[in-house]
Amino acid sequence: MLDFVFQALQMTLVIALAPALTGLVRKVKARLTRKRGASILQPYFDLARLARKEAIVAESATTYFRVAPYLIFASTWVAASLVPTFATGLLYSWSADLIAIVALLGFGRFALTLAGMDVGTSFGGLGASREAMFATFAEPAMLTIVFCLALLAGSTQLSNIAEYLVVHDVGLRVTLGMSLIALVMVALAENGRVPIDNPATHLELTMVHEAMILEYSGRHLALIELAAMLKLLLYISIIGCVFAPWSLAIGDATAQARLVGAGLYVVKLCVAGVALGLFETSIAKMRVFRVPNFLGAALMLGLLGALLLFVSRSLR
Amino acid sequence: MNGLAFDVSHLLAGGLVLISFMLLYQTRLYALVNVYGAQAFVLSSAVAWQAFMENQPHLYATAAIAFLFKAALIPYALHRAIVRLGIDRDVENVVGVGPTMLAGLACVALAVVVMLRIANEADAVAREDLAFALAVILLGMLMMVVRRNAISMVVGFMSLENGLILAAAGAKGMPLVVEFAVAFSVVVALVVIWVFLFRLQQTFGHVDAAALDEFQGLRR
Image 1 (tube, rainbow over the protein chains, first blue to last red):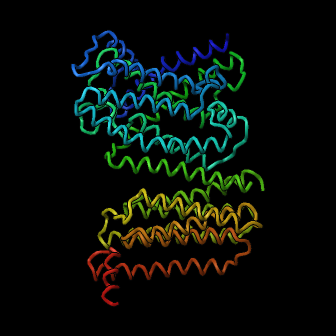
Image 2: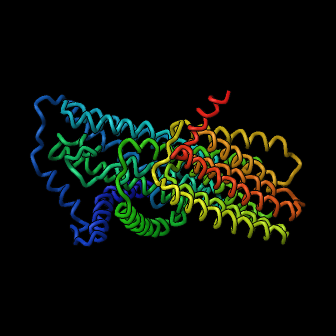
Image 3: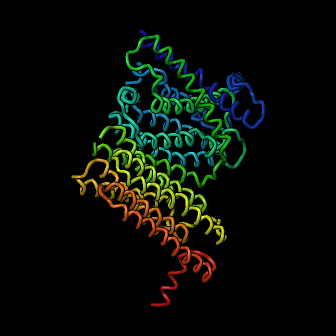
């Protein structure tokens, strides 16, 4: 029973915090450019406004166009519920490993690109083709990171990896550093953050995510936006649970420990949000054709990390 | 061998290989020279750590030489050369970055496989240092092969030299005289390269080594 309560807490927590995280990043970016910026709560108001509004669907749209937002949102939410955010060993976390999480996100991306092309406007197709190109480079990189972690911890289960890293003395590992950098690069690309795509622009030739959802409005748009916010939170949670797992409540922890873990999780998100805002203001967006190089570097870091791990394993 | 000592030397040697990849990836000359300086700095820390760990004071001298010449003097000289040659444009790659990276990874894999098989009797740190040193050497050679600009070829050569020093520091009982000799040979190489660079610039008006290919053809 208690298991159910905590799993439900995790699922509501991620969905409740995701807009605040996006709001925090926007606020930090605004403050750093000497603007006052909207309140951190603004994304909630935006979502509520969109949910109230009428959903307008293009004439040429098929049924899929209406279904897609629910598919995207559901796959992202399920993926987010599988990541150990404040405690390991929750009810659902045993049902799928990190590869399954990547697959769920891949499914969400597939649904989104298909929806982008559904109406048949040029912008949607443009965004979809770019998104597909980025995915082709980001997913191998992500999988090499998964391999590194799996080699190190002996499991692809995020809960097991986090527990292994907390319990065992892994020491200074160059592989962990490389996979951290690679994972951050992949996360930036997957979420369309600044060096890859600018989440704040509309109607620019460089945009990717915004181009695909240009035809959406009302509650459909609200769902897709919320899914995008969830995805950002999910990646930050993965990074947090693998590379800063000390605040997690491990295994069969008491309810109190889990609640403390939830509090620390919020702190972790705040730190990550401020860091992301700082990073985004200090860097310029790169040209689309340099993105394969950027993600290729992430892939290479992952492979090199796996190689180095292999060396130190065979020596010890 | 306690865990932390091994981990730190693993970290530093791994960092050296990583910086070699950054050299392959970097296409701007100024940044290339800076990255090279960073590699030399990591090398000198790796050697100093080795000295501290194995209590071999003469390795401190090696570390100091590496720092002085490779992390300070050579980058400074190369910066001067870039300014005087008036080339602050992009470096052109012969092969694209992607295939180069893959070739580099293959080099590292080769180095690891070869060294772990051959040096079976040596202790863990020495074997690892040898494997990574071979990787750095191969990456330096790769850099000299794929780049056309003379400055980046020089940087490739110098980073190859970094790999040699790492290997030498890993081998026990390397006399200090040899290290001095290596360090000074690098400086001599720098002088020769300096002359070569400016001759190239004078003759062809640029430092693209592709011009030499034609020259070779005329002679044959």
